[in-house]
Length: 112
Image (tube, rainbow, N blue to C red; front, side, top):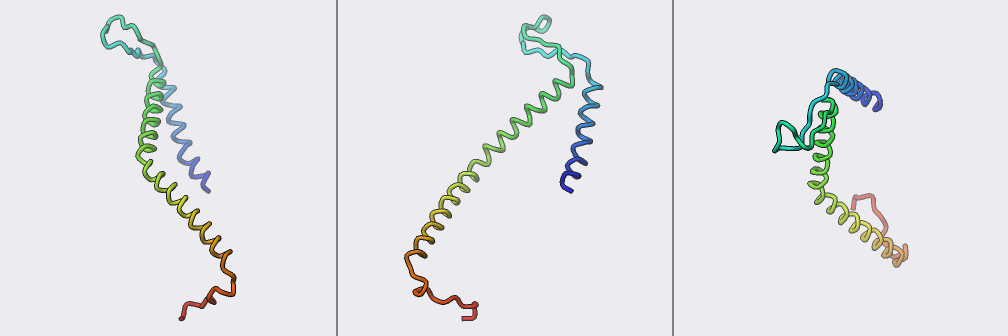
């Protein structure tokens, strides 16, 4: 069921990307020379769809990196909590091993 919904979303997106690429094959001049407008030093003729898709990919990468950086404090807290839980778990096991079962109080059903 999950793969069906994934396909339901991804197939139209893929179709839109393919249609956009086919409709925008004409080359555009991309220049990285802000000084010379008539004869730029670093200029490339690239299809428009490639320019748009590369810009989209760069935006996704920058957004993903920004989200990853913003979640750093949460990852750090999770690591700290995981270490603390493991230390408490091992301490509990050590204490249970040190005390014989007969010395532990009997478990009640919660009624006192």
